[in-house]
Amino acid sequence: MKQVLTSEDINFLEEKLGAASEEPWSLLENDAVDTVWVIPGRDGKPLALLDYQSKEMNSANAGFIVASRNYMRILLDEIKNLRRRILELIQSNNIEVQRREDLQSELQELKKMLRTQDEPGLG
Image 1 (tube, one colour):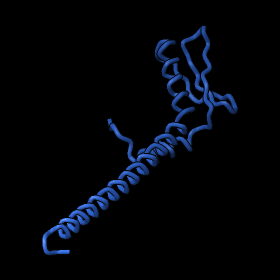
Image 2 (cartoon, helix red, strand yellow):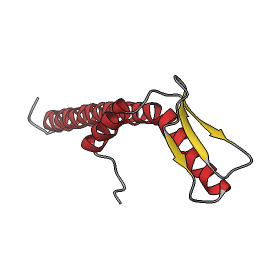
Image 3 (cartoon, one colour):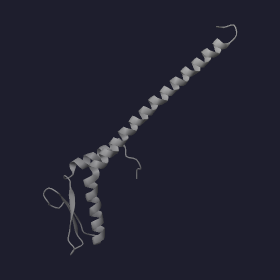
Image 4 (tube, helix red, strand yellow):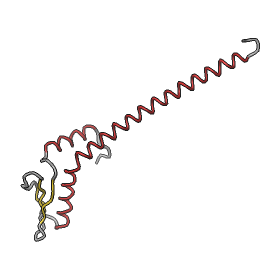
């Protein structure tokens, strides 16, 4: 499995997110059975049924699915905002490094001029 999301991965996730039923999603559980339903917040008709594991596992898996749907937009936006901020910081740092290099070059030129002026018979 990949360790880094590419721009293509983010676009893929956004497409999947846009095609899915609107959030918020929630769980519908019945203590009498091991079945857990995933339902959207709008019409209440189940989207998914988790039934083949234990009650605890069905509930945990359904909870993960619901949390993933409900927070996916926030997570994708956060990733994009952080990447944008990183690029801004890199650009800012590059400008600062260039400024320091320019000042260092200017300082070297000034030192050279001062040495030339201090030499006997010049100046």
